[in-house]
Image (tube, rainbow, N blue to C red; front, side, top):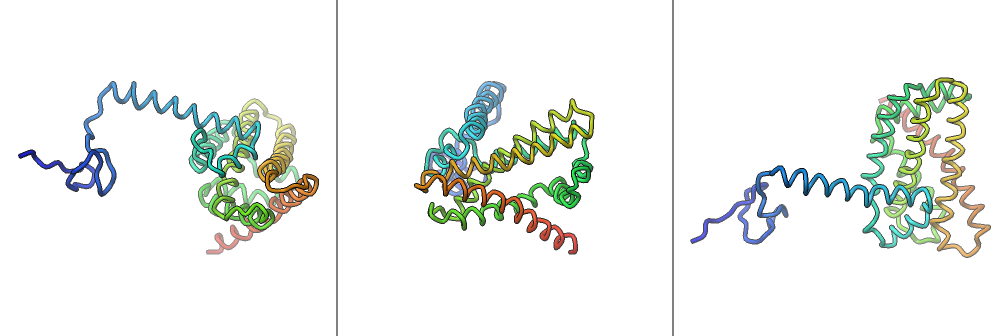
Length: 248
């Protein structure tokens, strides 16, 4: 009589190639050098290249169109939206340390002292910032582009990708700051970054929702209005949320 096998993950009895309780593969074994280096490591690199860099390219070259296709079902080639966002946030944080610049000082120099509070909160609580900002962005896009009939979750996905692209621009800015030491030049560059992010938001929304609106002029005007409102109102709401959080 064959000896009964138990799942190494949850100790449940195994009757098939996969555990019926936790789903782990039954043939789990010790790691070998070949498996780690040749199989897992190399596969991880090429899988990352296939999805990660493809998605970055799409977010730069045809942002709205590619993410609309993703939402509609073409997902095999794209990297996970939230994982991408977390990776870019992490890279942005690491590169910012190399740049050794004080964003709060830049805000003060550009007459935007109030935004230093957002930057401080974002740096200290990156996940908390996302929990506040992404839903706010999604509420605006959900309400203003109701004609698309996308649900709130789908708006969360598209705004995760849009925010990821904005972090990509921020990473480029921080890399440039590694070589720039003049605070005036950095301040001008940061102001340019803010304008670039706004333009990108307009292009992203225009491309994404272009399939749902026949009147392209009206759509363009709407995307400009929504992008400006999102920038202004979300900032106000986030500052309010930070104030409530700080008071507690």
